[in-house]
Length: 258
Ligand code: MG
Image (cartoon, rainbow, N blue to C red):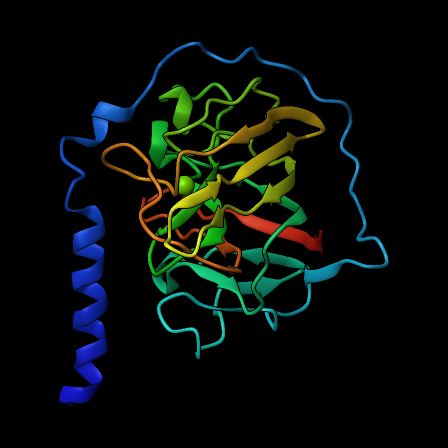
């Protein structure tokens, strides 16, 4: 038992060190303006995977996904009728494969009967590089941002608590949304210092909401983001957010390595 516990304790203490300088309240990093203008996207069109894509979810199975809590365990969210639906009791899931620079397509849908307000209404997220358990990584927020006020650096299309989207092109709950992402991983020097930061471009329902923005570091719920730890190729992670609102569904997820 002792040897089994040791790595857990070690990783917990490393996480505490990484977060030790993060002080204050979550509200300290919430930003409420400028409010991105509402843009009505064009009619929905799907985007089938090109020939060189790695299909991460094709509507049938979760073979490309594992549990974040234990990467040896297959992901156990619900697959039915061609859709992947979050199972909040199972926690976050992430890809079996790791990626550095890539193009990602992902479709998501907030259920029509969604309840709640602000951050507890259809919250999920795509961690563009998962760098550890829980929510460690760089989160592109997923949220019902259709007539749902919250801090603008926490709405759909934001890089959570770091980059406000340039527009709000979300469709109503019950309709499908699409993210197309170009991710450039951060590069670290041999001593762990940042050589070049992560960069991200995001199209949300065909509208650019992040335009090749450089990131300050992985997402932080409390305190400012900064690069604490060098990392290499990383999984892509989907968030099971712990609020009580009805779970989201995903479909047609594919990635092309660049
Ligand atoms: Mg989220």
